[in-house]
Amino acid sequence: MPHFSTRHTVGHSADDMFALVADVRAYPEFVPLCQTLRIRGEAPLHENSSVIVADMTVAYKMFKETFTSRVELHPDRREILVTYLDGPFRKMENRWRFEPLPDGRCVVEFYIDYEFRSRALASLMGAMFDKAFRKFSSAFEARADALYGAQSVA
Image (tube, rainbow, N blue to C red; front, top):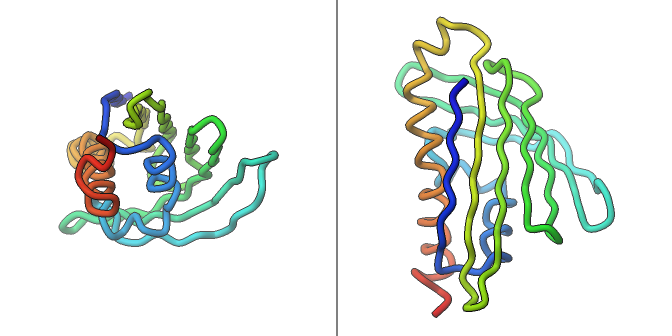
């Protein structure tokens, strides 16, 4: 089962990075392969936490797939948990964590684990998804630079 994880320091606050990743509606503007994103529903989860159910359509050349995910937003823990609900995968889960540093920067941790439902789909789309998932973290960092200014925290 393919998986990818990264952990690195960025020049933005943990709260800014959390807000940026939590803004799923903006994903089609900058997330690799994300063509559209539709929110099915939003609701409070626990105190200071919420959940979003969304459909994301990813496209590359002649390939196009839509999958549904449950996104848990935990701002107090600076953590976002994504659980796969429906689509071309057998399973998919990912996690974002944002650890504040004393100088105002933060450590961003991104993890994703996925498996396609069929071997045929894995052979057709596997390399493309793997490449895109490896670019996710850097796409969010570039978006933060665009929104907040490059290396916004000195």
